[in-house]
Image 1: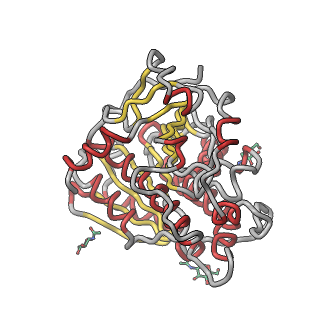
Image 2: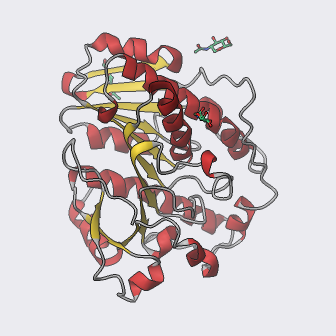
Length: 341
Ligand SMILES: *[C@@H]1O[C@H](CO)[C@@H](O)[C@H](O)[C@H]1NC(C)=O
Ligand SMILES: *[C@@H]1O[C@H](CO)[C@@H](O)[C@H](O)[C@H]1NC(C)=O
Ligand SMILES: *[C@@H]1O[C@H](CO)[C@@H](O)[C@H](O)[C@H]1NC(C)=O
């Protein structure tokens, strides 16, 4: 990746507006009209959002990929056996455990997972764990069927991730060393995972980073069905395609909105073809979010974020004097939490 080119793009066009206060933003999106039929479809009655939590749904085909780059080790195991297998590798529980849960249509061999592997390859004192839940979250023929099925599995997958983390805790990994990172539907799973972890251990995960949490089927659902402040010591949320594939909800201890209301990223403008062009543009912004966050891992302090109630205010320069914070991974184990207010 050409870092200088990236920097040029980012310097000229990526600005970040941070919401530290959860309730003020809600009306901001009302007059945002540049989404067409694709967005309308995603939020229409055509899509059935099943959040039933009372079924016997097994997600045991989920695979867990474990990477100890420092010792050139990687291991793959089905979720139910994952902690037992991982713990045979002489775990150093003082390391940070980065647990990445990807979204709809993800797979361990895709670019997002590769980006995350590359990002953490050289980070010292870190283990990386990546979930592959593609058995339950691949696309399916037919209008939105694959997404509906994935949404249906979100709770069960989230609980299974929570159980995995609980078992890891019981092997001696302290909660303060567990950092979960979710993209899209994976972010929503982490709401359930964090809650299940609290219920089982009485402790909170150190941190959850939610990258453009899935919007369709979630932005209008109950808060208990979404990633949110309280499910970890610190929950940060990144918004890059708000109102499209990503949620518009302000959910975390800090919510970072990248560019244009966190809705459209540079070079991701909808093309001239309606429908298709719009959906590609949405995916482009939705994925850019993972790159932004991954970039902060080696460049902490790169994205400055101003506390602000709306992009409009931000754009008018009305927040220039407000509190400034940094979007991204904190440099050390201990960090100052950004709190609402
Ligand atoms: C998952 O559960 C099913 C049904 O109990 C079983 O047949 C299958 O072997 C299990 N798969 C794994 C990977 O454990
Ligand atoms: C996992 O380890 C094997 C060797 O045991 C290696 O061939 C393979 O490339 C590794 N995979 C990744 C993703 O690092
Ligand atoms: C954790 O416990 C609370 C309170 O009983 C419950 O409402 C919530 O659903 C539980 N979370 C999970 C993921 O089971």
